[in-house]
Length: 158
Image 1 (cartoon, one colour):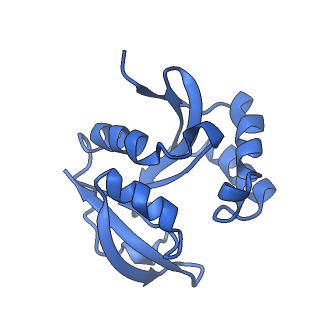
Image 2 (image 1 turned 90 degrees about the vertical axis):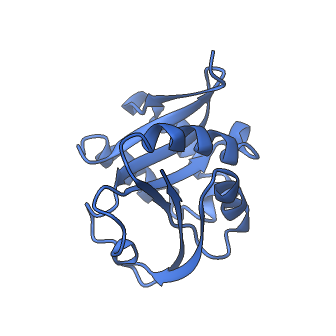
C-alpha cells in the first residue's frame, strides 16, 4: 500500500478543514478561516478546481487544491505554459513536517498531465518554501499577485 493517498474533498470534510484553518500555523498564511472555508466550499462546485484531502496510511493529514494556472487572473503566472497546474495547500497537525513528502507524491501524479506545476508561497513562509524544495520545486522569482502582495513563484517540471 502506498504511504500517501488522495481523495476528493466532500462537504462532510469542511468541519475538519475549518479546524485546520484555525490552527496558528495555517491561519498565518490562510488568513480569515471562515472566508477561506467559504471559498473552499464554493469551489467544490467549480469544475476547474480539484480539491483533495491528503491521506497518510488512510488518515487525513493535509489539503491540496489544484487548478489550471491560467484559469483565473493570476498575473504572476503569465509566462507559464498553457498546461501549467497551480497548487495551493496546507497541512493539518498530523501533516506538519511531511509536506515535502506528500507534495512530491502528488506532484508525480500531476506531472503525468502537465508539463509544469507552480506553487506561490509568501516570500517569508520559509517553512513552506523548504517543504516545496523537498518536493522538487525551485525558483526564487518574486512577483506581484492580483491582490498586490508578493509571491515567490516556484515550479516543478516534468
